[in-house]
Image 1: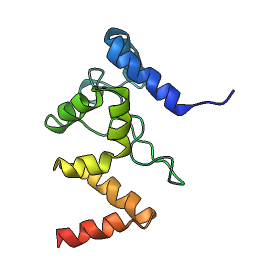
Image 2: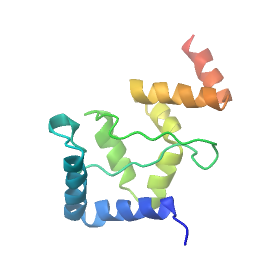
Image 3: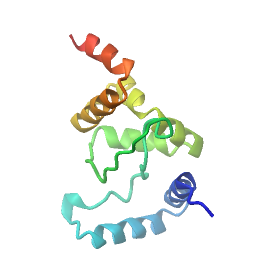
Image 4: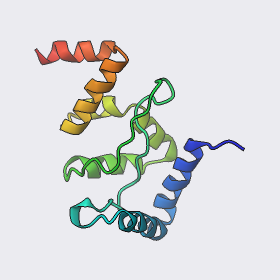
Length: 133
């Protein structure tokens, strides 16, 4: 039996959407396990995000945990993610484009986008740089 990460992500998504109390307990246990307190605790009221971008097309994956919460961007992103499982998948497969199209500003995601684009020698990055000049 092979491990299917997408099945695991869907199970967490379903738990968040259909059993929010159980999801809250699970996230709280993880925060406690890592001794996270105050603003550093994981946000249990927000849909989980495990992967974003075209992860099946790249030779690498970057893991990050709790990169930050934006009072402006996060609720909008969460509302989008909760629309449906299909929409959730589309949102995070095209996450950098979504961020750009909605004019969200995030130093974390902008830096990450430039880093990943540079690794894969993306034409999108060169186009973005031309627009910035």
